[in-house]
Image (tube, rainbow, N blue to C red):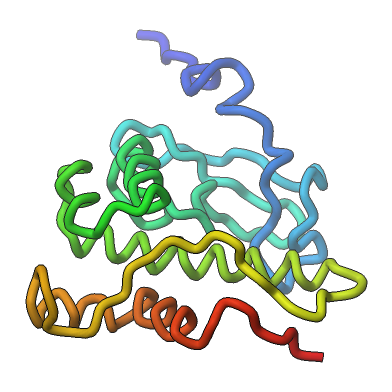
Length: 185
């Protein structure tokens, strides 16, 4: 009985797409964060349906998942659900509404909110570091949000407690301090 050739089985002949969008995540590697350096290759496929590539860096010998450093890292949810969660949160849906729409636990939505918030903050800092001359003041023209003291109106004390913790609590504190702030020199 002959063996089946599985080299072209995953997402076409190119093994799932170009590796140019990936870089070695190992800080000790000479090719750390160098995209399209030619040092990466696909060594195996993981996941229930064998749809996630595991990459190998020929420079340092480090192996890592193509999901490393993304919102999809360490999640078993389908990508469509994760995209729907992020879209719902982006449109201003509450944690409970997002959980109901996406048919997941509210704690899952809260975990994605925390992870996405950290990534957005990191991205923002990187963009600010690229500026030659940072602005004197930062002003947000349109920020729509509602922050209420705990225990008032809909939801009672439990709802207020959830809003005051984590990322939402930090955003609430920032909103209370005003929208225009001096940029640190």
